[in-house]
Amino acid sequence: MTLPFARATSLTPRFTISRCTPADVPQLVECYLDAFIETGFSWFWPPTRESMRAWLLVRFLRRFEDPTEQQFKIVEETTSKVVAFARWGVPSGMKGLAEGFRTYELAESLTCRDAQSLGKKEIPEGANEEVFHEFFAGIKHMQAKWAAKSKLDLGLICTHPKYQGQGLAAALIKPVLDIADAEGITAYLEALPNAKAMYEHYGFKIVDTQQYDLTKAGREGTEVLSIMPRPRI
Image (tube, rainbow, N blue to C red; front, side):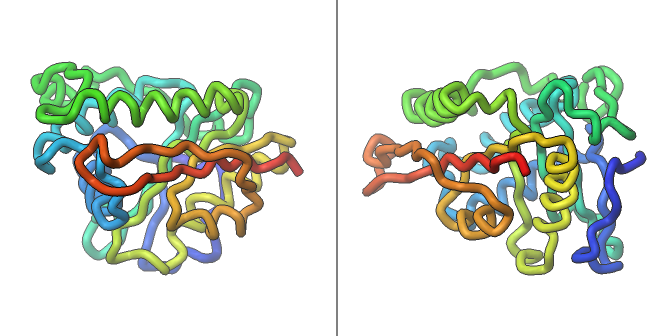
């Protein structure tokens, strides 16, 4: 499918960038799991990877029905493996990402039909309900406080640990921000501690934090998400 931006110069010929489709979901889920397990940002997950995988398969598939969300992936050519991807929440009125975009009905994909058989569980099997809901409630609170829906929201980006440091995140972020700049649109994200410096490089600024008490999940200390808008240029 057509991309709404030029291929980033930081991306070597070893990789291709394109829009995600529902058929990519199993690989997107595995990339997500591998990336976030490495960061330790998995304290609200259920005890088993299998349970989180089953929940994510359905959750990720439903994203393709949403006309406000656009997703882009990077694939390693030799292995056909999705090694990085990003999901953007696009505000109404932003036109520059329209080229090549479409939504999908779940029934359009065999993968989707298979995933629906897993059910529509609100939380993953085995997850601590209080901890799980508290995590997402915190994010929703900050998104409402900082009017995230009116901004270009980088809702998710991840790179498989084996492919980090190769310019993949830059190839997923910079071209979209360039479009936002051209249209005078503010961007927004919630950042993990290990990613703050990268986002600051692209002009995002910390304006708030969302803190979580890890003792509720049987761990020590607190986890902090940094709330980082990026002013319009």
